[in-house]
Image (cartoon, rainbow, N blue to C red; front, side, top):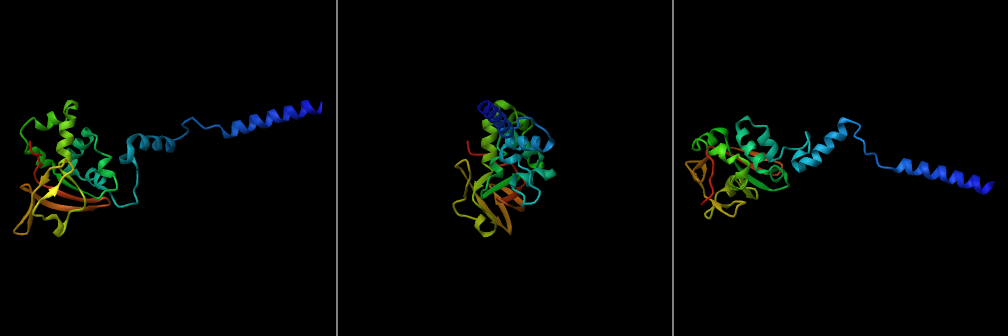
Length: 187
């Protein structure tokens, strides 16, 4: 009788322990749902309202860069702009995109042109932090595509491949130089 009683108690304790340690697979609230969304979206999906903004967050918060943000999303480059860097981005304004020939932007945003769009957007980014005196260079700045952009200062105004730098914003992972033209990689 003692053996049966001990076996029964051992069975009850085992069931209790297994039940207490089983993983919870139910989604029980909004907090878990937002964590799942962040994990699915990668690093760009992380919500952080305390730290200094990264390059993607700066672009997302700028009404003058909604076209650039749409291109970044269509090309799948969101996580690149949130990584630790340092990274320098030459960010064309919406009006810069409007200067492209009619229909160009619509064509680039099509899924079948994702690689071309990614190449153009990547041509706007350089590994490293370039601002102030170090943005100028005889050899230019090497972009993430492997191509170079020419940076010149004329009468105190900085130009990148003839696009004027009209503003600069410091980000947690580098710099955003706002430009008035879209840079096109060499063919």
